[in-house]
Length: 250
Image (cartoon, rainbow, N blue to C red):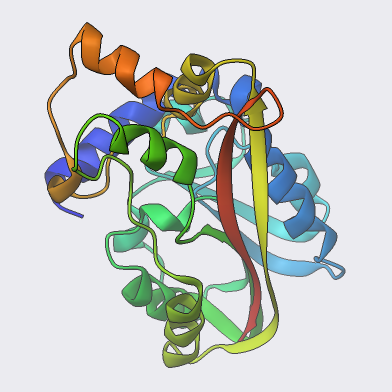
């Protein structure tokens, strides 16, 4: 991901910061799954892609020192005063090697410009014996939105995510041991296609992660075609996220 796109991602998430928690339903379910697998306490912990720091209280009970990192300062400003906050790009981590006993990251690492390289960096900042608890959006996500766009034109209008097997290979190549791994499809349901499309914008995730996918604004006719092409299941417009859950060890 280019520097320009990184700025745009930060801007989208900053604009969504005030309403993020209201709409981040799938992210909440993902965090519950991730947190349920954290059955030990750690010394220093990094919350990578912390957003509005909604997990700060829970993670604080599982660590002696908690550091929250996010690309958006507006997101971090939603968190408690006095917490350790670092506004930085996850692809340029400002930490020394062997700094953390644990890394927690929920629904964030898919925004990395180079996920395999990021995994290598995370391995480096973990202490020996440390663990990483990660949930990462993978290939197959937002398929309903992709289907809807196919009714408008032949271009790709949704983000491309790493496939599950490539993610596991990248984790191993980074030096991690895989203690546990699973993949689940988490689905958000809406009354209308318009609400489904808006849901992605409401959490700041409508920024495309590649210039190859970027297209201009659509007119009213094309937008109506987009909505008419949205697949409906059981009377609802679904938004599906394929999510990998990993517990990695160093």
